Image 1 (cartoon, one colour):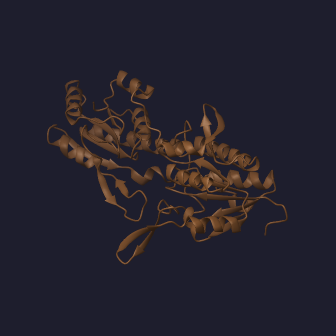
Image 2 (cartoon, rainbow, N blue to C red):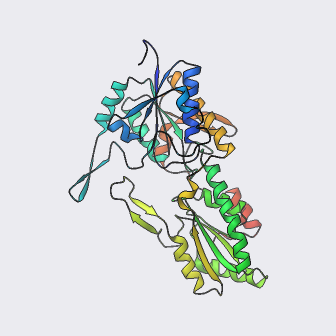
Image 3 (tube, rainbow, N blue to C red):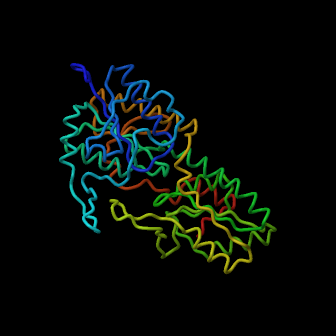
Length: 365
């Protein structure tokens, strides 16, 4: 039970899971308890828990030993936007505004600050609630590294590490069998994972959403490699990559989700197109959710701890409506409103793209 005058901090995790979330939960809980004698409440399954008033107290012991665990001990969902909440009626889905219920439940919880850990969707909803008077602080979380206002997000380094290991392993079999191997990684609108893992893994062709590709340019590049005695090629492609004048490949639609499009399969389409005109066998590997799972890298454990610690400070200082962020080598804060302006994309003149071109990497254009 909450003691008289004891402050209470709430934590929720929304959107897709990624390595490092538990490290943030651990940092917030331990610091809040040890330094500020606060009570900590974990909201179950993101905003779903706030809609249905489902939560659990978090003690020091509850978060001990979770630093290295992937996923989130609180659960998460990427479908529960309280302002646009999906409800099934017969065979049809309709959307309702359940935000009033959330505001009542938050008031009943008597929390002094709600820390929302998530990507652009989760943090945009958090900003909306801040405008409704909720004392909110955001922590940026996404493997895609596409949140405005921060130089990097935790989870990104882990995803790049996993993707790069995949490229490394594919490299040997591609070279042995004289094949074109296409590795598809996550990245709907932003190609940060493909760019970094492609450069780190020695990819020959890197395709990202920000730079539409031309299939004929890729074919021309592969032929030139063959002329130099390189009878194999590694292509790293983001799931949101698309040809010039073309569209993204949609794997399926999730009608009950506020963002119903689920991308995937560009690697298979590209493989078929290349095999028809290039005299090399072509294979595709989709890494998909492998990038989200498992233990966070040391870098992400440290970053998550720093961000979680800063989030507690903002709650104590009542500096609400902010998102903790990485600015150079420092941890700071920016207005949550920045997140609502859209994703942080890879600039077409990014230094890694320039460096890649200068060492012979093709970006398909």
